[in-house]
Image: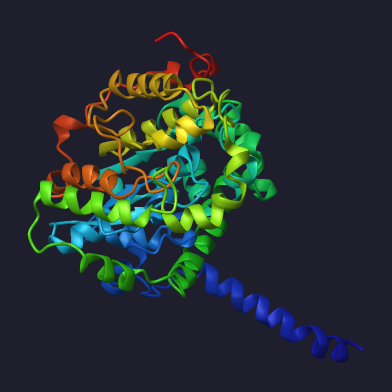
Length: 418
């Protein structure tokens, strides 16, 4: 009987033991190398965002992260990855963002990322994140990184106590898929307590090593290679960088690429996403509100992580297509008030490097669709980035932030007086 059971269960047990040994043994799998990191830098793969291996390897290479969301996938000829390659910038962008990522996911990402420590970074802010409901639980769960939350929990006995309590509470509120030990650890942090010795042992010796080895093994397998697209788009640019010439090129290209509608929206996007239901969006946004949102508190958590890492940050405030705003009935005041509030939150704490595309003098073709940077908008960003990318090391004089805990309070999330 026992012999029969062994033949049935033995292979399963042996395989399970082999997997445990594989994940817990500190082996250098060497999946990160200059070639794989170059591919990862423009892949926009969620595994790269949720993992650490590729980004940590890139710390010692010529990369500066651009952190954002779905706008990073708009790879026209003026996209920073294309322009940086074409004009041989000293450092190249390392893109980190996907549709649905927002401040809280990126706060955990920045916290675990060696790439931002004492270095530069670019962060793109999207007004639509700042809805009254904030990030959805499903969206947060999709990009939730067990590895990054392990690092946050293990470091929770250091740093700003109110920040740690806020993040732990917020993770529990959004209720991502985590095991019992992590959930209980987060509850203790949220209550202002330190995690137990047993919890720390499990996270430090079992969970984190296992997740790190998974990242090393699978973090670069089968990721999308966008290099061919970047090479193709780069060929459309002139050999020498001249802003006025590029601006004319971007305008003419945008006009050609958006000629099937009068909203300055890319032809493909309009055809696939809007054409058949465009009438549904008439005055659809006439009651939209970007002043009351838990995202302001999540954004503050992100700023704390940049401060903790001594990161010199350039912030880009993404535009909304002005013609689309008019069609959907979104008042310009909504965008102006959002812009004033988020700018106040940044500048009052010493984050002064802001590229604001919400109210430029000539807004034509700065968005590729309804809410994403494109064409002339990317070019405006590029013109600021090319100097910023000359050196990846942070200037210590430009990382002297003065953080204010009031921005973690719900009262600030709903504040209209600033």
